[in-house]
Length: 409
Image (cartoon, rainbow, N blue to C red; front, side, top):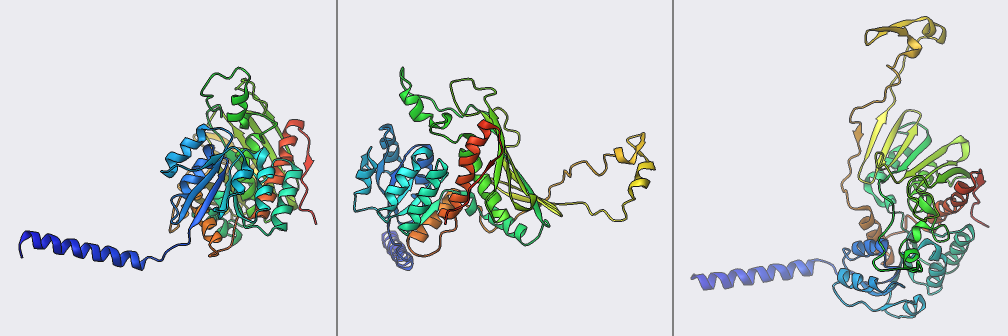
């Protein structure tokens, strides 16, 4: 066989192999997506959606025109765009709607979409105010709409496995959760052109203003509240908190730091902290149980267990006993032996996948739209976290304990 015949034969074999492979791959049902709110989070969601086979973006709605070209670059094509969400919803070529507009607009956009009967992937938080949350829940339920809330960490394999083990009793009875989202940055986005009236400032930096944002407690803490609800199996009953502008005196009206304590039944607590001038803790959640603890981050999870204390001396003996520690004679009650934190590696959670949580979430939603699975982070999950965020938003300004209402009816 000469070289030309060999190459032709190899080429034909490769083509046949490719054809067979394509034939063996089942076709997926297309999911045509419309997007309401194409800012930074909307684009990240869309970027992950476009990684799922069969998903395409067919229309976007945003009141800030530069977003149109940004989405075109993501999609690799010219995507029809409008500033009016009713125009987008009037289209007949959309199977599902991604809603990633500012939280203060969620009720308007979700309710309008629910009335069309389309499936909705709605970014957190579900709604801005207490009434918004009740109204969204009522409309989504009334129209029997497929709805998934953007609590993507419910879809992170390591978080799912960690909380499965917590529910199985691996750390005893969980009683407290400490959650952090600490960053070192002003949480501000640049305004790209002169803005003497401040219109672009409020459009681009809507997260910094109380009339359009739930602040750090909603924009970041909603994830941790949802995970605490998941662990404890209920929503919190009340919240007390505080916030302040400590470093960034730049005209913002929500705090650049927030601390809140959420109370659950049986005396259980979630303690949440977010600051913007030190990133030491980063984003992590610690679940404390009677026999151990688990640390869940945005990349992994690790278990730690309590030291077993058998034959411990009685209180009166301990008071009289002396020990030598680091060359110093001291009372046993002042010894650091039992109080120093464990600094070992802990037990890392091992999972079959470490897929990006947002990709896992939007893939799961797409499969639900196709009828292949149920929604895990559904509208009720979104309500239980968002109603707590809505109340906490007021509680941290008033610094009073406030009750969190449950679902109506």
